[in-house]
Image (cartoon, rainbow, N blue to C red):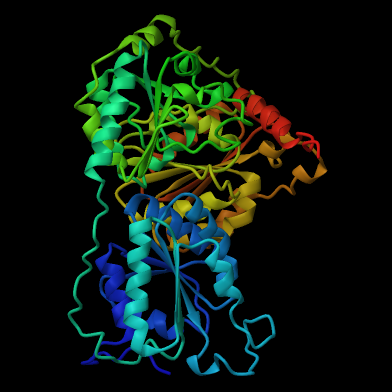
Length: 570
């Protein structure tokens, strides 16, 4: 087999896939080569609208596509059959949980080998090659196995369109002998996608708006709480429109940080149960009516199911459904349409926000460190944030410390709360930074998480990214310690800056620094944002193993209690 001919007059499967990816907004594809996907990669590389980013392993390629999709709207990774597919599948499952349209393309076996009694490499040693497909059925919204050129066009277009419509990952397997084959359906000027937009049922939408407005307008101190599904519903602007019109106190769930404006005049903080922003919990849970837009109530976001809000006082707005209290529900109501319509019907009521202002006391000032005092975990980089930055927070205490950051307008923020896969942030930082080269990504990553996926720092340097990684070196899995301690939470210490220096190996721009005190850290930040602003920067922050946030201590004890509930009587 050979790569794409430079003057091929006919359309081929490989060209068609490349064109479709460019058409839907993919500019960068994250890949790991393997013998079953090499010819396909030739065609992707040959398209002038695509940049193929080689990653160190398939898991990170998937995480990078996840991070890319968060800011770009869609992402793509390309791996080889089974050994690559089953490696990337953890990242695809995470993208599914976070409602991200990631197109996972796998180079499959030669089409002639399906249905035979042959045993192939990269399989589990039996003639049935369907294990990978069956695994992906559980974590993707559509699967396309392309073994015949005649229906390749239809299958590829179906899968990509479904990813965009459902905002979920899809799986496309393409036999390795098909990318170079021309076919009449792959003409050089394909018909552009014309995806039918979902529409609300007008009668249901009107009824939902009227019923909700009646409930809210009768309330004394209603509040608004934004949830993570604002993204998938593309309803962020509509939610802010409702906040402007209503005058209600405005909060966000932890996993919606970055999707609700923190510069809004009525923003009161993060509603996260017992670990909420100071005074936010009291205002939300004392309200006589609250509207949640796109919430996910799991054991982590509810702090071990300890939230005290009452469903009979809640309006729950999901991407296509509205539920009022414990009863009335309205289907076929798109969140964006609903919130825009509701903004025109609600009466302005600032009571909850006025109450917040009465009880609010500004937080205490963190005491200045004594010279030489060991570094303490705090929100060190607040002053670094602006509209040209974005924050990636890794699973762990970084969740809690980064929640305290006040995001300027335009500053991005991402973390993976639903799936919570440690190591996600390294690949996600790579993908996010690749999607928006005009932003400087600041990642806060624990040492245990970094050890899972450290290799793709190499790709960041290779791609000339200018991200800053704060590596929190406290000797172990701190979040696990606070849930349930044991010797398994202690990890082997690495020379992290030495590792990154070895990966750099004199090629590209990279700067590392190891800090132990606040003075060291402030100087490192000054360097990273000054002389080293055009470099990839890696700052290793050495902290005491027991230096954790108050919020993690509280959250960990409650999640531990939830995990340890005795079985229900039989």
